[in-house]
Image (cartoon, rainbow, N blue to C red):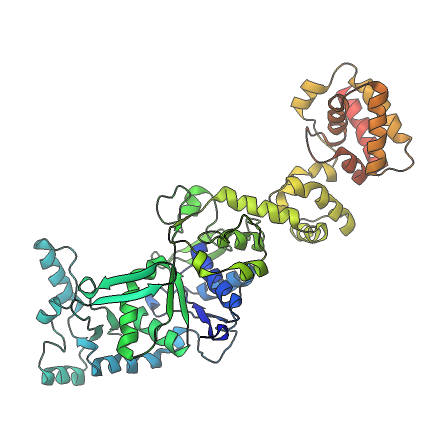
Length: 508
């Protein structure tokens, strides 16, 4: 297979918001496709109409767009293998199910839900709580393998309800090589006769998934570990149809920060961090109630920081490099560096990625982001200068505003700890003298202010700690922050001196 034949798909169900684990699956598919000059497809698997949530498909597409990992084929995008929404493909599946029955790979089962519940209850009372419809139990149930052919025909013609079940072979080993996990071997005695086609005329996930992957020429199925138990059935379905199976890669689980269990949709609220890419408001399919949820976008994260963090949850490049652009991730990505073990989510590390990306973002770009969030009267140039001063100490855009409010407004109060520790009896006289040096400067930029400051210290035989905290206190009201020489230059001579006068008047 040439690299251009690589076709992968992300196949979410529109049953709620897209969990960050789902985004990681999409990301790995995207990276693998791009690395191999292949095609990345999205297919919406909405066969479970009972759990369908209006707006979920739109939410999924918006999430991928914000992340910058849009597919090249899919609903609303186009492609030669559509439709890309399963509910629009419903006429396709029944012929394939009937083909399996015709070839003795599947069978009609006429048992009612009530009859099956009674069998399960009886088995439970006999000490067999995990009863299955399988190669042994099917011989005593109502299906086309046990009923006479004329009765099966009569039932079908009469419109009796039925499902089509996989005829699981007895005591056979199913073997396949997983790209991440190596060889997987499962005996069919451990597998049940899964329903492939439901009594409502709709396919189950298993049948629709296999048929669609075949028709869409999917070369690699890259999906979460939770689908690994279904893989033997899928392999058997490919064999039953006489089709070549794609290569499989089952990704490790995303774990809670303590490593204790899978990171769930509820953990974010409980532990105080987002688990969704973007915020939204969707109906809960279980309760029917509308639920709001918070995303990384609305929490202030940059999309490239979010993607970089996600890439490292289960994959590593084999080097010490941690900061990767999306293009660099495409270049470096390979499935053989994806771990088998679950990946622990670390909220602090996520913030670290955000900090690195914020610091690396240009002052001009940050200024535009700041303007879009806050109503600022300053010029673009002035806001960019503000961002330059504040971004080194910030994690989020809003932090710059919170931490740097003194650059936009005169201090209303003065840091108590600095006042008690540093403001002495002679401080007012010292600051008055330093203020006069600033007044005398003809050029009021950071290098000139710093040069004058050093000369002042030398003349007074004073250390930095005896003067700089006092200067900062009068001008900003704060005890720490960016370079005071840059702050003073940013504020300008008149504003800086006015603030010093105000501070001297208040602190005395």
